Length: 156
Image (cartoon, rainbow, N blue to C red; front, side, top):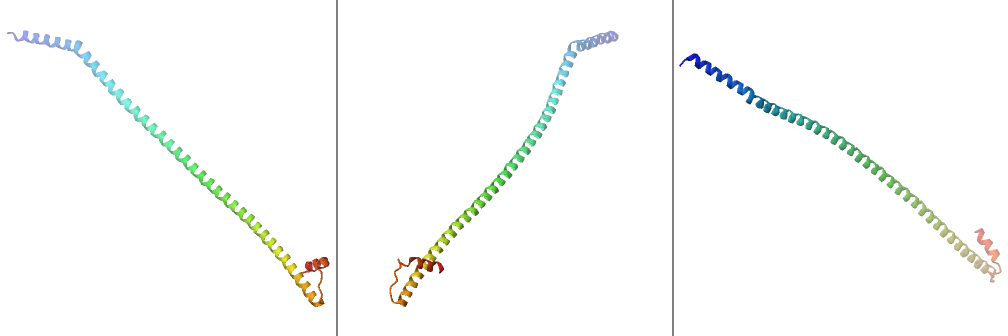
């Protein structure tokens, strides 16, 4: 065997194998690798976009939560103000009712005092008539002297 011929045959086989790999195997392999790289890059980009979207959603959720808390605090403050207004209105109504009741009671007391004075005047006038009757020793007709007795009662 000739070593030169073997070397040439091996070189031809080697170059044929390289040509076969370069034309038939290598392009689909590179295409598969590039496709896989694209899918990985798309997946990473989608993950980045998802993280950004998640961060944006969290920021919006936090803003909405702050707005809701602010609105809740505002509603609570309005409720406190309304409660204070109701308490003040009730207090005012109670004071007015107390004043009205006091005026009614004072009017009732004044009327009772006037009735008591009238009764006292009548009793005093009767006592005065009976005293005068005893002094004069005769009976005075109260109907005949009504004007005089009324005048006497008014002076008392």
